[in-house]
Amino acid sequence: MNNQFSLLDYVNDGVFVIDDDYRIVFWNKRLEIFSKLNFEELENKDLFECFPHLQKPYYKKRIDDILIGGSPAIFSSQIHKYIIPCPLADGNFRIQNTTVVAKKDDKNSNRFYAVFSIQDLTEEKQQIKMIREMRDTALAEIENRKEIEAKLRENNASKDKFFSIIGHDLKNPLHAIIGYTEMMMEDFDEIEKEELLAMLKSTYKISQNLAGLLQNLLDWARVQTDRMDYTPELFNVTNMIDSLVSLFELSAGKKHIKLNSGIKEQLIVYADQNMINTVFRNIISNAIKFTPKYGEVNISYLIEEDNIYFTIADTGVGMSKEMLEKLFKLEGSRTTRGTENEEGTGLGLILCKELIEKNEGNISVQSTPGIGTVFTVTLNRFKG
Amino acid sequence: MLLSEEQLDVFRELINIGVGRSASLLNDMIDKPIKLNIPNIWVAMFGELEHEIKSQPDMRLNSIHLGFKGIFSGTAEIMFPQESATNLVALLTGEEKGSPELDVIRAGTLNEVANVLLNGVMGSIGNILEGQFEYEVPVFHEAKNKLDVLDKLNEQTVVLYGETHFEVDDLDVEGDIILIMELPAFENLKVCLNRLIEE
Image (cartoon, each protein chain N blue to C red):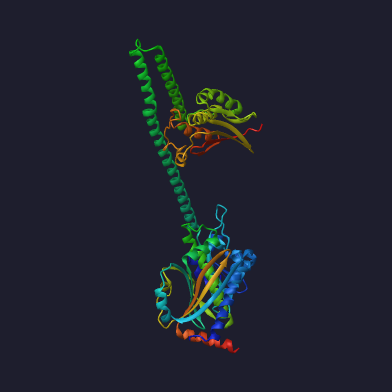
């Protein structure tokens, strides 16, 4: 034991000392515990043989400076992690801050020892890591809450919209039906046959609109509450669009609107057929609704890589920038009457967007007031 | 004039040799090309500087202080504006700049970088002037301005001031290396410089 340094056995840091021949001349008790190496096995051994990584110039040059009496050297834990490997049970090493100072030899003032003092920072670093993890968890929680709050706001808007539809869009046509039927019952004997037929036709039309509205409302409510069945399957969209064109031929014809489908190729997609049908039905119905007499509604498509882009272009009244911004948003949605006073709910396009997204597709719109509107629906193409 | 042009030239060279040595060590250590230069060195009595320092706006600083005794005695000081220090430490450790832990990390890393720099400078002075110094352990502290770092100096204290400029990757880091000594110690330094000039 080198008595010059034995007092250092009682300090709380790991300490070891080398002489100017790089021989280890002291290794304190604390460092024995940290490193699991006993002084007996290291005594008078060459530092660089025992710890070869210290031969790197940025260690050796600085140690050499100390051994000629140079100023203290600091090896921070951030840059070096450790100077002497001190294994932990988990396979990692103790994190250390090391300060090396020159100590003049008591017997020979021209010789210097290098005294390495190793401060163990493992616990502090673990606390920092723990605090960092706690912070990350807290940040994730805040994000989560923000999402929940946004969802709640959205749900609240949905609820408001739901009540507004119930209160207005459903109530008005129902009152109209009640009014017509009441009139027909009360004045049954006095009403002319033609007038009665007109009243019945009006009642029928209002009931049909009401049924369509109810269907949309129910679909939308199912989507909102995640209760809508999503059953994707392979199906032929060309056939679906052809059927819809046939379905709308009558209403288009009443306004002398040319409704054309330019889809000649048999296009197969993998999606929920009912949902996609609802989407195209709503868009085509809107196109007819907002196109004045003698206009056109053209359906076309474009295949690009894995996508099929369907466009439904009309020569209708078009929409302003402000209207476009609110088009797919529940908060700002409102019913707009068609060119022939056709009614709607303002709900159809919101439903379309949700249904398309559920099918991993996309819906977008471009419009110029007075010129027309182009809706583009993107679906994943099935290549077979 | 506290130092003649000739003395100042020799002193400037000593500092530059030390800084060059430190740069090479830092290169090895962080495995990144690092350029260090001292574009401007000047000497003044603290009394002459005090007014100017007081008129400067407060700027948070990180400083490292190294006391030494020997052929001449005094303290060597490195000051980094906190923003420069944060940039430098973030670059060396890979930590995010905004990270709250960087404050904890900054002290350790800066202490080592400053230690390498000061040791280079003091080593160069010691070697070339053939003088032995005894050193205290370097101490890191945060200050609200330069006056806070140069606290308790009297008017007759000599301050040798070197503006340091680091270039690492695309990052520019500014700092100051300062040697502070009382007049008798400064006279000893001048004797050493004159001896070197005569040789």
